[in-house]
Length: 317
Image (cartoon, rainbow, N blue to C red; front, side, top):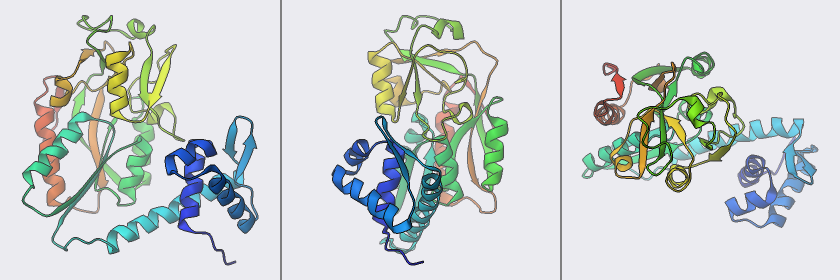
């Protein structure tokens, strides 16, 4: 069977599936709604399948559509890898480093430090703050050399299996007790420590995880604890606004970067037994590049400057 489906069609349909509506996807893609509707219709007719169910509340994937999206993502991922490998305009000696991470300010600061150190070198750097499942996929498919994320007693069984299935190894960087991040004008800001009960009357802020929206893939620890109100968001800028201008809270490692230290956000220890082990995943059969090792050293410098964490010995490659 020969088809005339383009990569652009696949990208459009995947975006519609992720947004859950043609209107939202059109805004993300800067493409008109009629164009997207026509793309979906043409693709469905070409393949003889129905990709979406249309309802008054929006659109959802059919069983055929779910299978289609899975194959479409694989095609685009492989093409992106091909394009990155063969259309690179830099010389073969240029330094390349790609890192995917959960939304940690210290990861960004370490990246900035590395870029500044390499200012006279030729390089091609990429830092992607993204969802937990996407970090694993990025490293698995060689889009990123390193993936920075955490495991805990609660999620370790699920994530460790995901690492193993992807052929990845997890190496710990540090262990930390969960801290509550709130604005300095929050009603709880003067507390020396907090309990989960203290937080129940305030909205919890959490990064959205897309289709892998389970407690085990949550970027915030203790996401399974009950809370009356929840706000999801997709970038750290939004989180900063929510914490400084609203009585929301989020839970993280307690590691504060210089950027956060100068903001109106405070970190308060949470009285729970849970601990977070933050580390990195990589392909076990490949040695880390010199740039990746340099990045990890910058990362450790920021981590070790925080008295709230227990660091592990540097990993030797």
